[in-house]
Length: 118
Image (cartoon, rainbow, N blue to C red; front, side):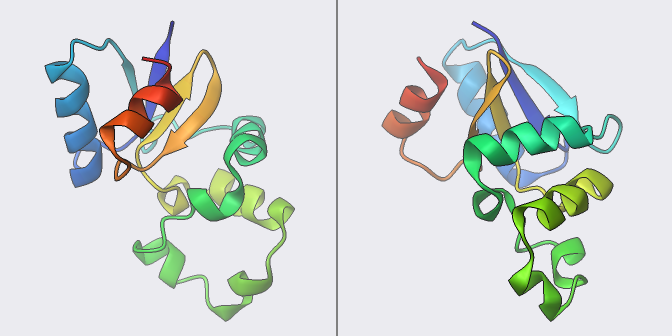
C-alpha cells in the first residue's frame, strides 16, 4: 500500500496529519505542491475522485482573489484553476495507491482510517 500526501510543509493541517501518521507508524510520501505542483492530468483525476467542491481551499488568499465568478465555474474551470495554482487546493490531499481518497484532516480518526484503508 502506498500513501502519498500533497500539501505544503508549513500548513498546520498537514503538520497534524504528519504527526498522526507518524504516531500510528504509517509510512507515507510527502509531495510539496509548491516545489512539485500537480499536473493538469493529476488534478483532473483528483476532481473525478473527490469532486472540485471538496478540494477548494476556501480559506486561502488565492481562493479569495478569484472573485465572484468562481461561484458559477464548471468542473473544467476548477481543474484549470487548480492546475495553475496549487494553493487553491485544500490540504493535505491523500492518495492511496495513486487514487485521491481524502482531502483535509478534520474527519474522525475512524473515517481517516477507512478512507486510507488502514
